[in-house]
Length: 206
Ligand SMILES: [Zn+2]
Figure 1 (cartoon, rainbow, N blue to C red):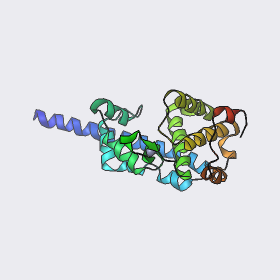
Figure 2 (cartoon, rainbow, N blue to C red):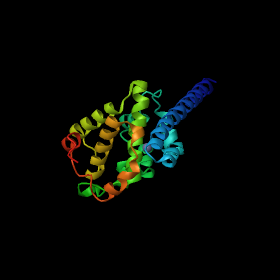
Figure 3 (cartoon, rainbow, N blue to C red):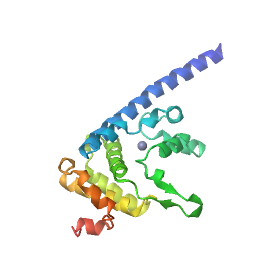
Figure 4 (spheres, rainbow, N blue to C red):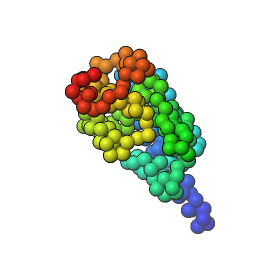
């Protein structure tokens, strides 16, 4: 009898967390869609992160659900040393720079991300920051966060993709997201134009 009660509690809690996690995903998707639309990739915005509904990702994230306040993937890695949800996620979603890495036994290389996925990654960053910081969030904050990250803990991302993200976040923070049509940068990105650093961007040397 005792076991039954415990199981019932367990399942009720699991169900509650499943609803909570579903809401977290939908709120994230809502904001990413909003930014993706403004950046000119509405379809990708709609399809963003659908793999989160796969059993591998969903079940683990419900198990390590953090009341929507922090990432269940981080919690899973902390608790068990790895996250199968994350391994599944990053290998099914091209907007993650980790998808474009290889040669782990030889120092790891990062491929230049195709333009449309680099733009989706920016929408993802903005959407995540908007949810995390609430309405007081500004793109300038995001640009400063990005600068700080590159300085202290640089991602294994292709140099040109990195500079493109820096450039876009700077332009978006100074000019506003509505005024920029990202598609006009596609040709520049593909031709290797984005090969400069913060000082060049902020001093308008490009
Ligand atoms: Zn994702």
